[in-house]
Image 1 (tube, helix red, strand yellow):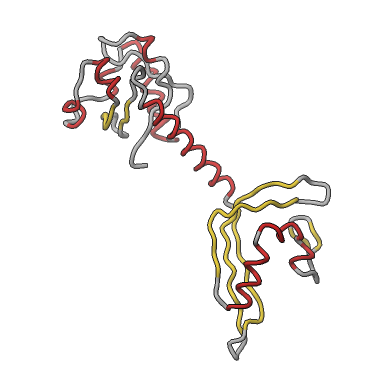
Image 2 (cartoon, one colour):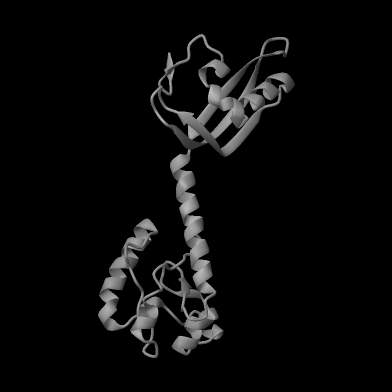
Length: 200
């Protein structure tokens, strides 16, 4: 029997996966066996080599250690189930980093930044946007502004295509929002490249 390209049949976990010793997984396994208390974890980092000649690779796992008992209630083994959630974990990390960058830009007085919902209605804006466009908080709170209304006619078609893509994928591919409102120079909006979403 092979697992992660290793011959594991008839071997202890420590023999089959010696690199887990320093990562705490075997200590947890021993604890579950000794106490009879199950253990589970989400998105736990783990480093494994997927073959004798492979470099170590970090992955993320959802897993559970469940004690297996005999008729007397004594623990006789551990049931282990795990799922590789690396891609989802990395995707969430990228989203958080993107949102952190946007929040930093949101606080810059020289950069206008907005939030909008999936219907295009602005739900928030920083002070720079309001000052550049001649708007106030009441315009935002009462839902009077949409990105469609603020977008110059020459940019509307391209922006609507990008928004249609955003609606399907929640990602913008190279869309730069420019020239929102006649009072704002187009060049002032070149740096508003990422627009955040709430309520995803």
